[in-house]
Amino acid sequence: QQRSLRSAPAVRQISFRMGMEEPSSSQCAIFEQRLSLPDSFIGLNEINCAIWVSSYAPGSTGFFWANTAALQLWGKSSVEEFAKVDIVTDRSDAVAQVHDDLYQHTMSGKVKTGRRTMYPNGKARVLDLEFRPILFCVAATGEEIRGMIVTATEVQMRDEGDMEANRALEMIRHSPTMSMLFDMAGKLIYSNQSANKFYQLDPTTSGASSDSQRSISLRELLETCEFATEEELAGKLAEITALRTGDRQLVLQVKKNTAGDCWTAIQFIPTKDPVSGCDAVLVNESDTTSLVKAQLSLLDAQKAQDNFLAAISHELRTPLNGIIGLSDCLAMDQSCSPKMLKSLRLMRSSGQRLAGLVNDILDAASARHNTLVVRHETVNVADVCEAACDILTPLVKNGVTLVNEVSTKGKVLPKIQGDPGRINQILTNLLSNSIKFTHHGSITLSAEETEDGQHVRIEVSDTGVGIPADKLDSVWGAFQQVDQSTTRKYGGTGLGLALVKDLVEAHNGSVSVRSVHVPEAPHHSTICPDASSPTGTTFTVILPLDQAAHSVTISPSAPPRKQRPPLGPSSPPSVNPKLAAQG
Image (cartoon, rainbow, N blue to C red):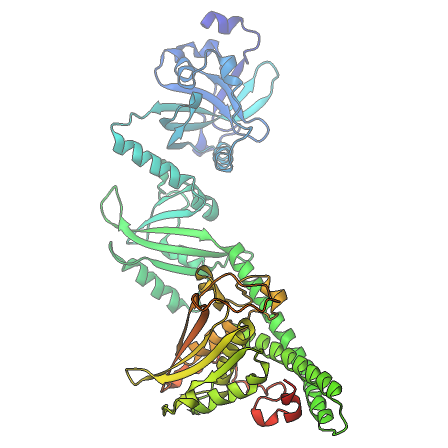
């Protein structure tokens, strides 16, 4: 092999010296004489320890020479084959970061040591490595290259536990999460590559940081975060250092006070140092900047949407109220023909439908931002049920009966505390939903006091098409329809039931649904469903008799809003009898 190395013309003739080109007094070169490879290093081939020369400088990263033990480690038969190993193409970001770190040590003249898992010849090998900076010269070209002479000693894994520990170490080392281990005095014990890069730390053997190198304490870590006061920072530090194994972890969502906008999520996990056995704190820090910026952008978009809705709400309500009012006035003219009254009825119902849509959209926006106002008044449930049925009776299809059992059964219901307008809106939305999907049979509104005497149960039942079992949970979502085709067939935005849920919960109540569903017959069909296969849906609303003072849903950051006036007539007396008769 020595003869082949001397005679091979492709072998690089290299001379090198240890340290920097102009070493300082603290970085004196160990070898000042210029040595020529391979002749001057034939003796290194007799050493069992693997030794090779490499460079990690940008543009010249690669291997240059190796002794016999290193060639065996890498599974190569000659120095020429070893020098052809490509360690740049297709390297991962983590490996590129390791190469850059080694280059920085080369330029600073610092010796780097550590345990690494490498994959020479595709096989995992655990090695204790020493990287010592050198300046070597390629004899053939005269080119001087700053590089490393690497000494590697293979670590024998004694058992499965050693291999598992090494696997865990490699996973933490290459994780994008910044991981650090501190003792209870706040001194850094270990930091992985991500933490080293972010905080510009200098790792030493096994990732520990010594006093002579740049480190970071637990307090200094917290000082990189924005706190309102020094007392708040000190309080968090005391809370963290008081953690002990078995305590729940502490999580902080903080903005860093570094240059530029940067947010992180930091977990402080009480644990034990596996080396000393003493109490320690494991810190896992993740960069959440992109997530926070996306959330802020979303909040800005929602605020812009709400401002837009608020700005145009008045412009929409004014003409709609005018259309509805004018249709009532025209209908009072005794000279109106039946055909004209029919047109006026269509005009009025269309205006009310659009008015209801505007109200639903505005209420949905208010509910999303917790600015939906719920008043506390004494409410007669029977009166509210009767009012809702009276205003919706003209909309019921032929062949369908709307039954108000609250008034017909003669039961005396206790009065409840709530917002009569909002409770009317709940019943109106539920009854409108049943009217829309019921073509035959009946729609029944009932109410009763619960067994505990603390609530009132209100039910809206119909014999409509029903809701499939797998869709029952989704009906409460905003802009949701059981089937997208119903948007064209029945109309609507899918906001009605979502608002029902928000309004019921604003009253500290609950709402549920149960249903029996069969495939719906064609819309033009006049065939009644088989009585032996009943279908239909029942919505159940449970409202408490008394409301706690804190149940009013108003955003604490916004002043109380005045109750928005309804769009168009909202009570039975305002309905023009001539228009209602045409229904």
